[in-house]
Amino acid sequence: MSVRLLLFINVNSGGGLGQTLADHLVSDSTIKIIRLPKEFNEFKKLNKSILYNKNLKVAIAGGDGSANWIVPELAKFYGYNSTSFRPPVAIIPLGTGNDLSRTLNWGSSFNMIDFLDLGERIKAIKNGEIVKNIDLWNVNVNETGNIVKDYPMINYFSLGVDANIANDFAETRMNYPMLFFSQVFSKLMYVPLTLFSLFGQPFLHQFLSGSMIMKNNKLKKLRFRDESKTFVVQNIPYIYGGADLVKDKKHRFVDDGNFEVITQGGALSLGASHIGINLGKQLGQAHQLNLHSNKEMCYQVDGEAFKTKGPTSFKVERLRNYPFLYAPEHTGPFFGL
Image (tube, rainbow, N blue to C red; front, top):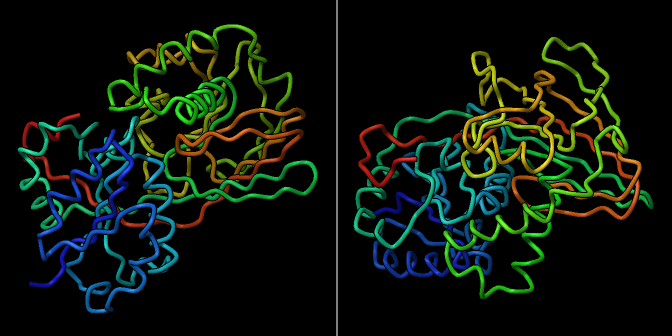
């Protein structure tokens, strides 16, 4: 039988569930498994009859960081031309936040009990028909000393308090990996880290300036409220593991070439967003953003945190888009959000 599913599995995700998933599916001849990170480049060496099979689907078993890594590489490989063949991407959520998976209706997590429903899930991916393009963005980071970096963005880009928490989370996971043995315990680790961030965080107006090109192509200078401590560019409906910072959802789309720009307060404001209380301010929709920070700070792209060493400029621009596969509505109880 021909390969119908190209499955990228981050074997380190989900507290070992990635490797278990690979072991469950390795004997299925219709699935080609690429184990991440070691085998990443192997997909480019596959026979063209597989890579350009018109029925081919792609699934990424991992977190938002895995998707942020794989999807831009698929876009480079297959091209950005929407009229050319580009296999759509589904998600099996093995990460902590899994916001892209929520957006595509593939669920908020994948646990041991979900192996009971694995056959149905794989079948739904192989036979999926609901495909929609989602905008991809590039975050250009230019630090003092000519350190220039480019990061692809699918979900969001942010800086301030939330990025500080994400950076502390990443450092804690690196230093104490034994504490992150499951998705549940990984999420619980955010609680003490958030409490530590309640005090001593700077306001945006103390270190940040910039402008954005709005949806109507007008240039708008950014002005921050006195209480704002977090700056967010949001591209898809979910952020921070299921929250949504956007109040006006009527004119928001994932494929219109625009993103939402929002400012938030500190940790308490971010916490409120998880229970549906949006205390932030929407600055509008834009398709290009320029920022400058006058001090060292933390920022994050799709949940991956980074720390600058001094004054830094940021520029967010559209890369084009890539097709994603949405789950059908009748996929069963384990696909719920």
